Image 1 (tube, rainbow, N blue to C red):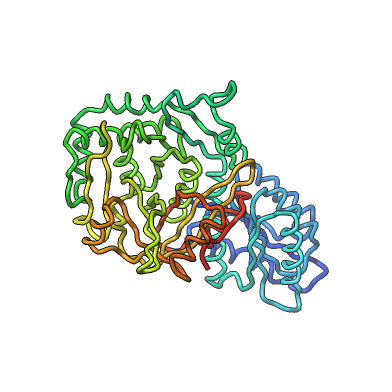
Image 2 (cartoon, rainbow, N blue to C red):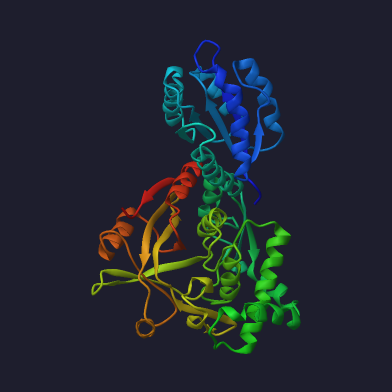
Length: 446
């Protein structure tokens, strides 16, 4: 995705204390931000008034900005702060230098209250700009803002049988899909799933075998037939070409029931490589998953709740086989088997034990989409229990308050049954993402 781009300014007032610190702060702030890998478009001078701001902001229209960083060395008028934000057309980090006689924190607090009421997305902080907290805070927010900007207007392909396009009325797409495009800003491309299949059939056996050999170390047992494994590998190669040819930021395929398991292996491999190919035709999940992968490039699995275990007060999550093998405790636990009556495959294993998982999903309609998220713990599943529960991709999870409370929160909140699992805690980044995308945010765990 490239380094996030931040516009950096230091503002001060000629009528307030603190102006003498402004120019050194500008140079130090730029150095600190570049040191953490950000692309910094620093103002060439301290901004004292509207005229200074007007000169600096003329340059901002030449290329998109992910985040505006405004360092305050003194109190400044809110009209100046607003001018900078409007010209940047970006979320803003409001930073105060820590000197009480300057009232810089009061200035940050005042504009933050205006920003909150007017839906300007912001973070704030206080400290010297050579303090590592400054660069770390800016970098974390900038990376989320960059992902939000890129995927806010993403290009997503939905692969379906051609007969699925026509809905009630003279339209090839449903009103729900039209609404999702308007709400998230995505461009939805309808593609016939036969295009993917036809492209796969042109891939040579030799090329498909190269991919199979390269991915083989990730699996303990390959129980699927050779023909199915070979064609699944061809689907993977064809999907990568589709992503490149159409310039896609996300991809989803409605495989159930006609093409059950057709893209599972491709989905598993691509997720391990940082691109989520949703096998359920869920466009919202595809966009959200790729945003999560951009924020943290570790594998993501799709799952659904299937059982409340009353003996352990945990919840079993399951899916028919598209999870990346990197989420298993060891390759020996991963099997690939046949799925469906045609050419589908299924990747099955128990999710490894993990202290923290992020769970997230998008649901809604009529312009009122929401992001649902929480943090879970994966308990791990012994092999005998995994077999008892029917194998598949299976996770045994819990949250604060136990499994019953977790399911109650899911039901009461309106969260849908598709959910994304990723190791680690992305709560803060996803909260920012929801605000940047204008989505309601619901936390399903404490």
